[in-house]
Image (tube, rainbow over all chains, first blue to last red; front, side, top):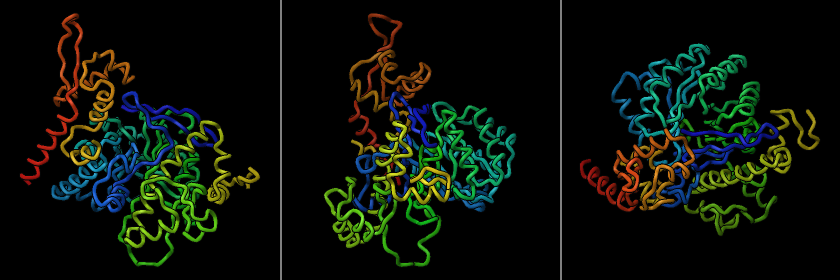
Length: 368
Length: 99
């Protein structure tokens, strides 16, 4: 149903359009997740609407451990519960373009039967994009067979989407799978976010593929920050690998051991997550964001009012969700104007990632 | 309207149908329109537009009749959005009572 058209690419970033019924979604963009809606509900004390989260795309995330997947296909009680949960999460997303991304452990082998059961689940849950699942153990020819079998289950206008694993050691294997996807005529690819240092080759491969073809590459399970400094907004950096949309990773485990650390707030001016103190030093009291949690507030107002009401974590998440979405629109304009590099230079927190991951020093624009 | 919509989503048909309906509704309201007009607005191929119009007709959100000037042509009209929401609201309440 969707068509993706690349409009320009610059400095390995891709700007495009996802079209449906004569309307289009500009990319790169940020995708909304159920957890972010939950945070929004805490802030507004009730249901949220498109007014609070204008994001046109929504990703349903569900944890699938190996044991859960086994139970999902064998135990009707388990499959009913998971089905109901996914359906209710889908409803929460409203009319947005909806896709489903199960977080499956790298070691879990997704069999053909599991793949088919997961497709059934998506068809029931009213998603617009229907995921077909790759698994580390299958070869590219097996993947081709799986895709062709799965396509028979997905009727127009629903859009098939391949869920490819990026955490495969051999780059050649990943490349072959991308060729299979291309040959099958799939227009949407969903990859899971993995370490850009460890799997750098795969990032280069997907980036090149995205630049050379009109494909919508969507990345799921993206950490909020880059692990190199726990400050750089990872998705804004990964947009320099041709990825068109991003959904943040949902924490898999409970809060765990409580470690007191200062709250960090996403700031679009530097594309980093910074503490209130650093914010004060860099930008004073100005928040420079007009999202509904920030509007009319200064830095101190923001921290005082939300931490006083014990909803600071939710306020930070909601702010990041909206502010980062808007920032992608600005980034898109820069790509269209072939100024991707200039944009990266202006953002303080992108420099360390460019040096460490891509080996590019933005100041001198030389290879490190 | 969107607030209401989010509450009612559980009872709504496929999301792609709803998005298609909203676009048509914004343009035509409950005025009559032809296949050609829809096609110009939605900028999709004939097959996809047929899919959307047939889907909307099946769930009762669209009616069609023959054009009295040219019998080969169909004239379409959307059901009013308030009507649809009212009906869905009732459905949700019935469902809630059953549960």
